[in-house]
Length: 102
Length: 486
Picture 1 (cartoon, rainbow over the protein chains, first blue to last red):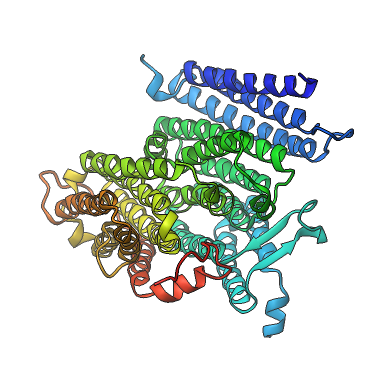
Picture 2: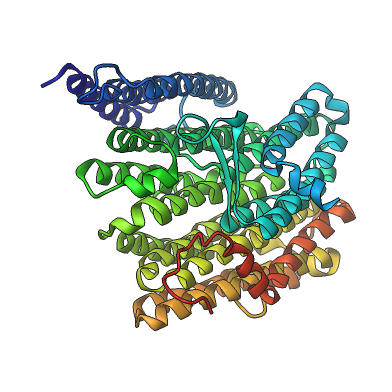
C-alpha cells in the first residue's frame, strides 16, 4: 500500500467522521466544525491523489484546487459562524430552532 | 454595428457586470436601488447580445486570459446555457422591479449587493465548462443565497438560513469529492474532455453517487428537500422568488450537464432511481402543499413538487432523448417564471393584509385584482393547463412517456397536475370569499402588482412560443441527436 493511498484512505475516514458528527450533534458550533473536518477530508484526498501512478512529479493542479477550496471553506465558515451568533442572540441557544426542546 | 456586437465577449460581460454592480451597490448604499436596477437591466441586454451572437455564430467559447482548456478556464455557452441565462435575466429583472419598491432604505442597502453577487454567480455557473469551476460557482451561489435567506432576521429566517447553509455546504463537499475522483481517474476538469475519456469503473460510479447526492440535496429533490420549505417560506418575498425560481435550477443545471455529457452514456440504473424520486417528490410535495394553512409554505411545497417533474425526464431520456430533455428545459423555464410570479403575488397579499393565512384571505380579488390575477395565471402554468409554458413542458413529457408505454409515469404526470389544481384552487377559492375577520389593510405599490402579473403573463406566453424557444435551445445540440425533435 503506497503512502498516497494511505492518505486518501485517511481523507475518506475524515469525510465519514465529519458526516457522522454533522448528523448526530445538535450544537451548531459542532456542526460547523464537522463540516470543516469533512472539507479537510476532501482536500486530503485531492492532495494524495495528485501523486498519480507512474509519474515521478506529483500533479500540481489538485494542489491549486485545494488552495481555492480552502478560500471557499474559510468564507463559508465565516458566514456560518456569523449566522450562528445571530441565531444565538435571537433564541438564546446555539441550536437549530427545530432541534430545541428535544 | 453588427460587427461590433459580435466582437464583444458577452460571456465575460455577463459575469463582470453584475459583480461590478454589486460592489458599487455595496460602496454607495444610498444609490443601491438605482445601481442595482441599471445593472440587472444591462445584464438583460447582454444576454440578448450573447443570444444574438450564438444564433449567428453557433456555440460560444471564450478562453479566459487567452489560456486554453487543459490549463486555463473556458467559458462556454450553447442553447441550453442560453436558455438558463435568459430565464435568469428575465425573472431577475422582474423580481428587481418588484424589489425596488419592496425594500426600504436599510434593507435595500443589504439586498442589492447580495442579489447582484448571486446574479454573477448564476451567470458564471451557466457559462462554466469545467467541473471545478462549477464547484466554485455552486459555492458562490449557495453563500449568496443563504445570506439573502437570512435577510429578514428573526428566529424563523435565521434558523431556516442556517439549515439551508449546512445542507448547501454538505452538498458542495460531496460534489467536490466527486470532482477529485473524476480528476484522479481521467486527468481533466473540462467536461468535454471528460466526456471523451470517461469509462465505467468503480471510481466513476463513486463520483456519480457523490455528485448526484450533493446536487440533489442542493436541488431539494424529495427526500432531500427538508431544508427548502423553512428557508423559502421565511425569507422576504422577492428572496423566496429568487431562491425558488432560480437558485434550485442552478444545481439542477449542473446535474443535467454532467448527465448529458459524462454519466448518461454510461448507463446503469441511476435514471430509474431519479424517476422514482421525482415521482415521490410530485406526490409528497403536492400533498404537503394541499395540507398547508399558510400561503407561503403552500407555494414552497409546490416547488418541491414541481422539481419532481424535472427528474421524470431522466428515465424517459434513454429512448426519447430530445423530447424528454426539451420537456425538462421547458418546465425549468416556465416554472421559473410562474413560481416567481406566485411568490411575488404572495408577498403582495402579505404586505396588504399583514398575514398569509389561506383561510382568512378575505376577498383579495376585489382589493388586489392584479395580484389575484397573477396568482391564478401562474397557477394555470403550474397545473399545466393550456395555453401555458407548463402545458407545453408537461405535454412533451407525456409524449415521451406515451411513446415508450410508460403508463406509470403518465399517470404520475397527470395526477400531479390534478393535485396542483387542488392547491391552486384552494387559494383562489378563499381569495374570492368573505372571511370572518376582516383586517387592517396596507397599500401595495402598483409596480409590485404589475411585476408579479407580467411574470405570470410570461409563463402563459411561453405556451405560444414553443417552436422558437426549442429551436434556440437546440443550438449546439446539447441533448444529442437520438431522434428528430417534434
